[in-house]
Structures are given as C-alpha cells and as structure tokens.
Amino acid sequence: MRILYFSDNSSDHNLRFLEKFVSEGLEVIFLDATQGAKPVRSLPAGVASVSFKRCVPRDANPSQYEGIVSELRFLLRDVRPDVVHAGPVQTCGYAAALSGFHPLLIMPWGSDLIAYADRNPEWMHATEIALRAADGFFPDCNAVRAAGERFVTFANEKIVQFPWGIRSGSFSPLGPAVSRESLGFGSDSFTFISTRSWEPIYDIHVLLQAFHQAWQQNELLRLILLGDGSEAEWVRRFIAEHDLGSVVATPGLIPAAEMPRWFRSANAYVSCTRSDGTSISLLQAMATGLPAIVTDIPSNREWVTENMNGWLASVGSAEEFAEKLLRAADLESGDREAIAERNQNIVAERADWDRNFPGLLRLYENLVSSAVEIKV
Image: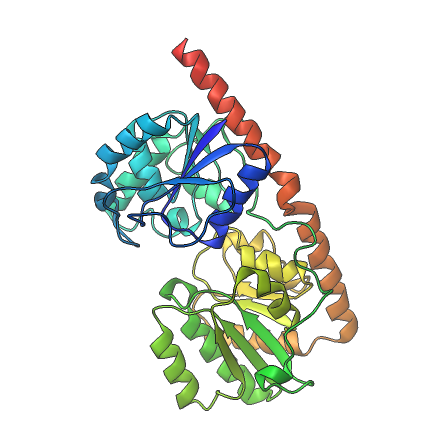
C-alpha cells in the first residue's frame, strides 16, 4: 500500500509516523508543504519525499493553501497513492480536500480543532470543507474527536482513535539521567521539567510566574525549561529581572534521543498549555514516573486525575499553578512512589504505540477497499 503523508512540518511526531509506516512494510511518500525542496531534517530510511515548487510559510492561513491545490493535483497524479493521510485540518487537510482525492484520511493535531476551528469564518469554512471531504478521521483523544464532530459525524468504522503514544520501554525511570549538579542545582532540590515550545499557546509566561511565586515560598524548587521559540526574549528577560538564573535552567532544544535522560533528572512535569490533544510530552513524563501538573482542559483530564496521579490548574492562572507546584514538592515519598507506579501503568495500558498502531493500518485497508467498491 502506498501512502502520501501530507503535513506542514518535519517534526519528531511526523518522523515517528514515517518510521513506523516503513517498519510495517508500507510504501510512504512524505510531502511537507512548508519545504520547497527536500525537507531540511533527514527522513527515516525507506521514506521518499516530494515537494512543491513553491512552499507555503509556517503558520499560513487556509487561503494560502488554496494556492497549492493545482500543483497538489499534479503531484497526486504522479505519485498515485492508495491513501492520502493529511493534517493539520485547516492547512494540509483543507488543501487535500480541495484536490478532490479519495480516499482521504484527516488527522487533526489537537489545537487545530480545539483552538483554531472557530478562529474566524475562513478557518471555520476550511475546517468544514476538510472534514466533510474526509473518508476517515484519526483523532488522538475524546476531546479532539468531539471538536471534529461539531462539524461532521463519522461512522465508527471510519474512525480510528488512539494517542500518538510512545514505544514501550523508550521512557522509564530506569537509566542514565542528566545530573542536577551539571545544571547548578543541588542534590536536595525539587526539580520540575517543562518541554513545551516557547510559543503563546503554551503560556510559558504563566509557568514562569507560577514558578517564581512557588520558589519564593520554597527555595529548594528548581525548573528545567527546555525548548525555544518566539517568546525567548521575554523568557530570558523575566529570568534575569527576577534573579532566577541559578534556579531555572534553559538548555535549549534537545534531540529526541536525549529526552529520557532529561525527564529522569526531574521530580515532576508541568505544562500550562491553553489547548491540546493528547500531549506526547505528558505521556513521556508519565512513563518516566513523574507526577504531572497540567491545565484543566478536557484532553488532559483524560490522563490526569486530581490528587491521584497529578494536579490540574485553570488555564492562565499562575496562582493555581504555583499552589500545585508546592503541593507536588510536599509529597511524601510513599505517595510519590504510588503516583510513579500509577502513571507508568496508565501509559503501558493506553498509550503503547506498537499495540495501537495496527488500528490505523486496518482503517487504511477499509478505506482502500471502500474506494475500490465505489469505483467498480
């Protein structure tokens, strides 16, 4: 089976899908709308790529994707895929829908449906066009499925739903860790880790304000703030102005292969994102045995239960996050061990990438079979 995998980035998430397709014996061609030539990041062995003569910029509006539809049709005639797998919804999914190709599987990325579908009439129109054209739908959680079904109700046999999980054993409490001493932290510190990009949707400013408030009450608290982004200048200024340079580490962007070592260096995970599907970084933290402090949004409530395996705080509330950070730091060792075991079990039972992936392959087969029957 030949899959055209159409997205707007070459992130680790996309590369993991591509690698898995190859390991399952599928022929996969990658099309990154934002690259006018071969994608900058190297692709997994066995993955081919095609490209547009003119690319669209990152964070483009749906109308900008209308301009590549004609070329997309030519590419589809050349590639002749059995299935087009496209997302996010209002960008690549929208362009794929306008191309008229079938069977088409739409894969939302979470915030595209939860946060952006109602952004304005243009985005609402693109959302509806993409979902109505879809032959299959691949949400990663109930919250994303519900957001999509505000526009279109899919038959159960046209949906596959599972988190973009993690490979069994890839994240665990066992193994080498980045030493806290190398970060300038004491061995007796209580360290939080955040792995989200420094972009507005992730509310990094709320996280830093919350950490500052909590640290003023407990000077043993430390924060590992991985990543980078458009708010980097504000982040560094806040750290400097509040004398947090010795208690907040900012190592930058970390290769995916190194992430387990960084999670093992922490005592708890924190994310202040305004919207999300199933967060891979949350699952990675849980698999490492970390309690999680996350925003009180539907997708997070599917994984975190207050006082059972972490804590929930209102979107945008630095005060609530500060309270939950302090609560995490005050955990007794026995409670911490119970949460670690609970979170590892949750991920093993519900987010095993290898166990869940065959469901997507079955949907591909169903879509191709249905398309053949329609043509006949």
